Length: 134
Image 1 (cartoon, rainbow, N blue to C red):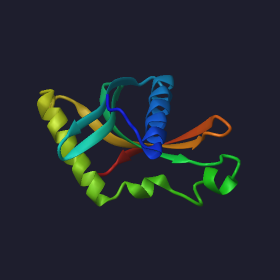
Image 2 (cartoon, helix red, strand yellow):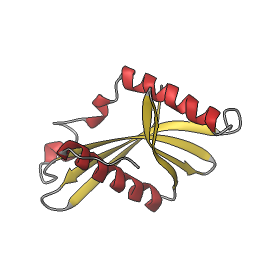
Image 3 (tube, rainbow, N blue to C red):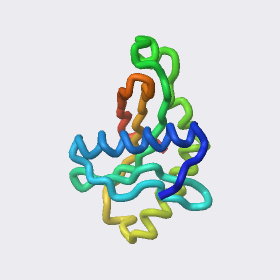
Image 4 (cartoon, rainbow, N blue to C red):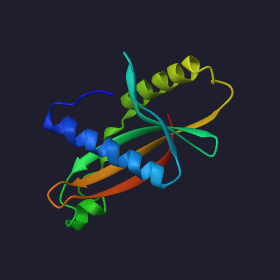
């Protein structure tokens, strides 16, 4: 697993750790984290009900008592998952499926987990967006 050094990277790592805990709590099996190729990365690869889930995690450090943030009015982390990012993910997913020799034998989808992290109060909220179109 990668080591993160900047404050932003450390917040992202905490977000990914929380996302994994969220997935396990919801009966997913985490298969791999930070699957990386030179053209892209998949944050989390998980499985549930014989479906592979390629998951992009976006973390926002914020004050969860701010209702506008909690309701996604002020900041929408999913907006950072743009067409360029999705294209890179598609190529990386294809690489994973070929490398694992499961290209034609497994159902899969792309999901996003949005983690709102309140470091000061040691709280977090996770929002799931399923079946992104790439």
